[in-house]
Image (cartoon, rainbow, N blue to C red; front, top):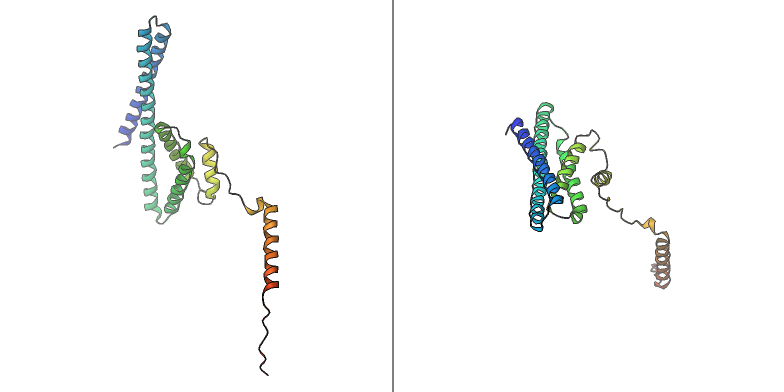
Length: 198
């Protein structure tokens, strides 16, 4: 599919969403002026259907746009790889996959429904496209990138695991206990004398 056709489909979905949004606003105006319960119920149903149509159109438009940009990015990368020979494409892609997997596992339970999951995937892929194209992408630690992406997407980063230094008293007690046990074992162990060979 040509870029022109893909962009036109995105424009059509955008126009459709705008028209349904305008219709929903008109339905809301009439809803406020409704004089009977029957009219109110019909207009409420119409508004709900229009709102759903707007959301679906926007989601589909974003999906098509993301797919088109991804195809363009891959085509550009393939052309660059052919021109330059060996490159960093494989390591960059591997790091991207690791980032996407880690963040998806961290936030998945916070997504309310399929619509929220679809939006999250689109936003995550868009941010990963930007990060992967940065020159220092391979140099930045993956932990720092995970924290950055989580904040950009509106989620709390994963909590840092507790270390031994976080509990100095407990560590000291464990060390003292270990030392005492070692001393006791040394005291109770039998003395081994060397054999007299004279």
